[in-house]
Image (cartoon, rainbow, N blue to C red; front, side, top):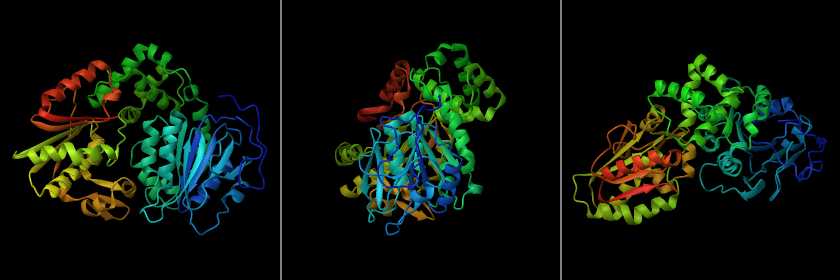
Amino acid sequence: MAEPSSTVSPNASGAEGEPTAAVEGKVPSHYVGIGASAGGLEAIDAFFTSMSPESGCAFIVVQHLSPNHKSLMAELLSKRTEMPVCRAEEGMTVEANCVYLIPPNHDLRIFHGKLLLTEQDRHGGVNLPLDIFLNSLAIDQGEKAVAIILSGTGSDGTRGVRAIKEKVGMVMVQSEDTAAFDGMPRSAIATGLVDYILPPEEMPLHLTSFIRHPYANKKERSVTLLSDEDGINRIFAMLRERSSLDFTYYKPSTMARRIERRMSVNQVLSLRDYVRYLERYPSEVDTLHRDLLIGVTNFFRDPAVFENLQQNWLRELIEKSDLRQFRIWVAGCSTGEEAYTLAIICKEVMRSLDKQIEIKVFATDVDRDAIAVASAGVYPESISADIPPELLSVYFTRRDSNFIIARQVREMVVFAQHNVFKDPPFTNIELVSCRNLLIYLQPVLQMRVMELFNFSLKPEGILLLGT
């Protein structure tokens, strides 16, 4: 990407409101969401001291702030960067080469490139302003979204990292040994989805290299990449050798976008060079495999779906059931949140009916690492944003900054690595849930999967698909 032709004059005063020197209509090449909590001020300072004022990016800083403490961040940052620094205001248009700061006592979102503010609910449990912003950034900007997680306690930002990666954005995290408090970085790194782990002062160089890579700003998607059939086939062959999974019939555009993203991260310009890079560094094959299999899920995802299941369909099946074992299959379960959600609502339905039957949830995925996470049943405190408080208190136990699924729920779920395309399907199933898999497949595989589900389901069983 060429350097922007227009420069932005410094805003030495750090005044609140619109950056006075911002160029009208200056759309950022990328939108960088920066999150920090305890110990974050020093890390933010180091980042902006090294960051070029003419990168073409916009920077939105989401820091955990005391509601009663006046933040001096705007004034302090204005001494570290020539970019205009301002506190976010309702409806403010985000522009290139500018820095925006979350105001105290507010949550921040972005919609069509404009900032939206809402007052924080201080009575709603854990405060997660970074997750809130990164989730909205992923939806609004997709591949132009970048998440940077700096020093802080807790796990805020972890859900946001998953959302950014699902939309093929990029993620940087402060190295744990350089963070004053490593809770937020450690939780983000544990997702296995982080592209760069660096000290804050080294991040700007890698960010600049990434955004200037030809693939990072392509408008025409993946035509050249897909035309190199030999290169794509060699990559798929390496992936199959490493993981026994054949990506040939996954959607080409999805595969190409994620391969391009790894090429941008590693500063590789051609597909043939990337093939050689994979051959030289086998760990990159594992990283690419994780990126291609990103499974973003959360507890009670699309709440209306689970409410409908609980109040109607699942309730009706359980009420009529005289089975020794009521069987559910969650295909593509990722890290387990959906499987546990189904187990929890089955518990709630049985409680409301005053009826006890054995529920067995078979939860499967091709991703061995995701299955390991699911089996452990340990989740960051940020899940409290997705689970009604009355269910959180009954079905989870708090330990430090994590929640652990209750034994009564964990024993209902059987997790297994399973390839839905070639492994035998489960049988006598009352409900099959497949909500985040079919969108990645070409029609030939979609039909194959549907045939298997038809074979698995009992008459009048339920097939639950994603939106």
